[in-house]
Amino acid sequence: MVSVRESALIVATLFGVLFLATADNQMLIPLLPTLGRELGASIGKLSWVFSIYALSAALFNLLLGPLSDRFGRIVFIRLGLLIFFLTALLTYLAETFFQLFWLRALTGLAAGLLSTCSVSFIGDFFPYERRGRVMGVVLSSYFAALILGVPMGAWIAQTWSWRNSFLLSALTAFLLFCCSLLFFPRGSHSSSSVNLKDFLRIYPQLLSRRELAAAVVGSFGVSGATLAVITFVSGYLDHTFGLRPLEISWLFVTVGIGAVIASPLAGWLSDRFTKRKIFLIANTLLAIPLLMLDQLSWGIPLVAAFFLISLCIGFRQTALQTLQTELVRTDQRGAFLALRNSCSQLGISVAVFVGGILYSTVGYGAVTILAAVMTLISSGILYRLVEEPKAK
Image (cartoon, rainbow, N blue to C red; front, side):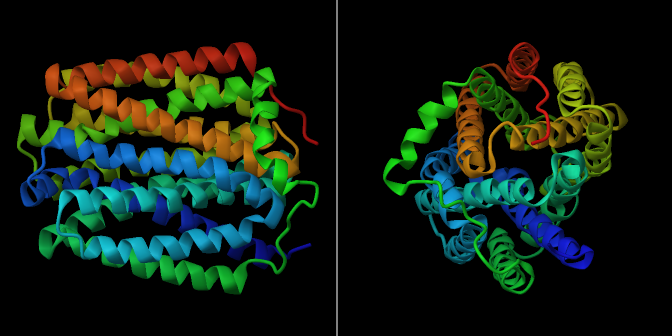
């Protein structure tokens, strides 16, 4: 049994791990126009970087998730941080679009591993009755990355070079690796019941359960919708309003502030009421501001719409991920969350790919419609097929 201080250090380290994984990918969004000019690639082509990142995370999660059930979350979090450190250093040296493309694929592998194992780690250590509060704090790192990581990356890129942003990511990954050695409990906390010879058989078993299949499909839509909107917003703002990367980054600050406020509050409310109810309310309401985005002018109206979007995302993300950690037994949690994350990343890959086509041929408005439709479908699936689990 760990003390309050030890728990706080674990939570702080997990916060940092998810912050790194999120900021490293999101800081590319305001840099897309700059990268396009330097590497000679269009915004549509650069969107492939996000697709391969997500696809890599999806595929390798399926392999590594069950292994984390066998060998424990800690060893794979450390492995992910080391991979992240190396790929960030190599990205600092990248000279061509295709070098960037394949390095982002490797980074996606590491980021997916870190996300799956960190959330599984929370499920292993904290009881369901108060897990929402812990999950809310840790998942607020996703949105803190918008406040600190994205503007910092944009500022570094505008002041020196976009390459220096990845040097900062490499140093952060190394620091977090050291924190994991110091603060994580000793031992793997593994489950000896997982048979390595048959570990891939667990996925058909999981998908044979209706509520698990529905949760996985819902994650496809939730994640895909969010990233489709966010990926092309910098190109839209640059083309429509002539905003520079640092100016665009302040919009992400606004989004991050809203979500950082919402995420811990969502954790408390979901523990007090139900995770399912909080998710359904927030996710369904999200479709309204999504459909308004391309109709608003730059300034207070557009910033307010993004702030509302961030509140909804913060509420739904915390509630959904907490609920999903309790849908399976502890010895299946890594596999299920890997499957869930893989489907989420696949949703991102598909939505960003389709969104790139829509953005290039129709415009940003078509991307927001795609996102709203995916969001509402996800709400319908969770409403009909997934019940609030009872704490085990």
